[in-house]
Image 1 (spheres, helix red, strand yellow):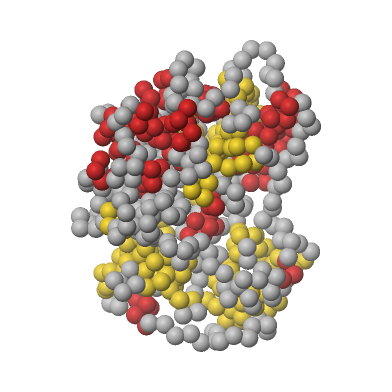
Image 2 (cartoon, one colour):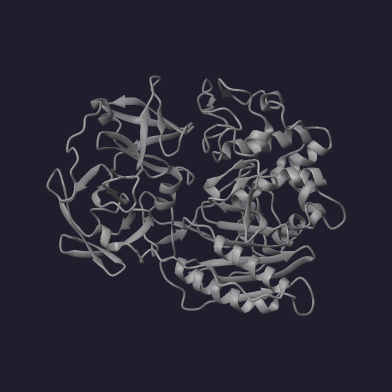
Length: 573
């Protein structure tokens, strides 16, 4: 049985992009906020060595980094290129989009409003935002539920639905399950506006930026700041999986003003923000958050395994432990930026890193390692070993997949294992496989490049059972070890849904629908039909994400709704 691929995992497979050429030079530009030698100076050399290895391994164009503690910003450093074509180095004053790290800024504003008696965190959100169209048979959704991603609402649809009769459907009782929800934080940005009487951007300035001295940070991403941004990159062919060495192109300019991820900042300013978190909500002159509010922000309200097996979620920020210390952390993924922030609130140290390309990963290892080195420096202990650099070309169990596979239509390919490498042998070509996730690979071959190549095992629950099958989109292959059924029934009307659907928004892009072994799939995720015509994504239990098909022309569906987002059939493969 082929293992299911989660929607977020698939987006990371089909939406990761990398630089086409490894830089022949590696620039490090450094500045410090404090005069004299930094108390962390001894750890800069091993950190820079790791960052160079990391950027080359991940093929990152450029990176910005800040290290800060309770006393202030301790180091700002930039690496690589802001402009690959011109070989121009990243500059410390350039803006990088911080993505979902913006959510903790929204939480700071709302907690301040709570302190002022203007917000009841447990009051139904529709009492504050009566225009927020929610369909639910469960208890009311509150601000608390939206801040903790536990509302039960779909995660990435537009806040204001194009169909005036449509509503956001809650799939489970609020507070019961974690499901990452950008839509909820877009609503929370409007809640700040409603309660504060001024725009979210103005609230960011007077409630967070100004008190912390974040003078270079922009509260919105707009074309007005494009010249201040580091040049940034996105996928050249964004409708298919691609390899670590895939091609990038300069990203289109975007405008983002909602609370899910609208801030662009410099490393120095982000260091000031880290300093506040390390000081448990205390700014340089006065507290941003009371002790009670910071405790709410940093409390583990709900398990959030999407952030890791030990992670929970607080208010707009993940709560975790590392080496016995309490950590607040978050990532930020934009169309053309990837960011990570880690803060140890026990030792009071932290780091922020951001890359000027969307490559399907976040620089978590860099921020985490910088934080760990700072802790070791403070404790006068030996420096920890750097995190491992996991190459997608190294496949520990490569021999599991070796053999010949044949489809029902008679198409054959062969997988060859050489040590810890895998190769596709097909039509006289020998092409390397790159690991994307467990049993899932990308293949740069024209017969396989539109879909991930997913292998299935005899027992889906046993990762050591034999590999017996493979799938590439709707095409199914088996090897000589396969002993299951060869035919599968399904409603024939599903065939009218099969095809390539697209929205030219860079946030939406392409979705391909196909039938595989009698199941309707969206990008490798099974769709479960409901009586009301919806199909529910089955990448997690009680998923709130859905698809509805409509507008039939000549026996083909021309339009699909994906959790409220519009996609249209395109007449390409």
